[in-house]
Image (cartoon, rainbow, N blue to C red; front, side, top):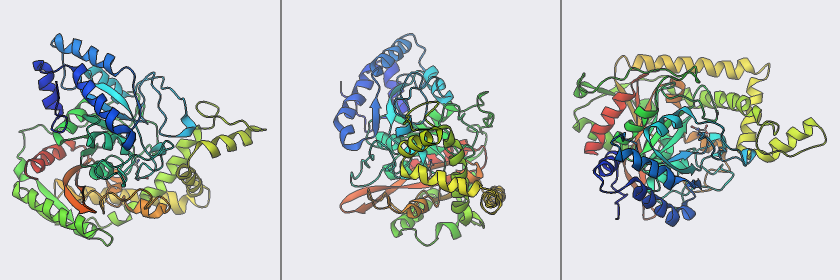
Length: 477
Ligand code: GLN
């Protein structure tokens, strides 16, 4: 039986599975055959698991018993920084070569309980540092819409897999845009949940005060289904909490007001095609009945420098544990110091080493106050800006990225220009608020249609508002 993967969504697959139109094994086989055809060219997966059919068989048994959940038998890709017990996992870094996870991340445990099928490990920028997947130790992932371009990053493998129908949905992680930016570049939906909504237990830490696991999917509805499965308070993550979701139907979606921070969205450096597409998206939102209102986020322009200082600081501390003694790659030296030097010098790629150095600098005595403390003060000011804005509007809209997907190699030798590509995404991580990227159309470049994305940010804990507005947007866009 041939399954049309292009138009498939989780709810469609679920209904076909429970009706017996095809089995979970057949669905998994359909994805495995696409992976076989396309993964060599795209490099979205670092590994396809050898027990996919076994997992699908277990899902079929559950469906037969009438015990299927919405996610039973749904084939997913998992970013290489999320632990699945007994599987290799390595944050696309050499320093974790041959490392095998000894437990399930909480998000994975919840998906297992729901009966999801894990297809394989998706490529990423090493330790979730980057914006193009070029920082993987295992080669760049290609954008399915134009293989000369990057898929975005750091969850580039996850987004490319979903965009190319090599998975029905995926898990990614977002520290400063790593779910939303690749989702935008690959023409799919990506959600960074409210900080704390999803447990970070079993997610390899990059920047603990920003990191969140979230879904990458083809529709807003699919992202919502996965989010509702993986969210929740967890005793293994003290920063996790139960967020109070607004329920459907208890409020009037048409009364929602969408704020546009013009000084931000009309900044220099945003490409013409992105600006034009953003105006079209606003027209669609108006057509759906939403009120559009200008707002001010006076300090949001400082989010990028503040984000990167905090990022470097936390990355340098979090990566200190990779010393070749406890796990992963080890290159012996004549003494302990040389051991560390060899292991970390050869095990980490250039971007990880750059951030460890810069992080050690901003945390060093004498510079701690000037940089790290200052950046944390800016974080508080940005949070206050958001709190004020969300007392006037329900949702804030911006483009997800300032340009379409860039060429492979275009920014890899210029870290600053790579960092600038995160201009719209980092603010939500500083604010701890939820943000979603939704496909908003295409721009033509060199005969290729390249996807663009609309970013919607919500108030703290209001992930559900983003789903509701996002679904209304997808219905008309
Ligand atoms: N591009 C950003 C960075 O390099 C975001 C990364 C992420 O969200 N993991 O830090």
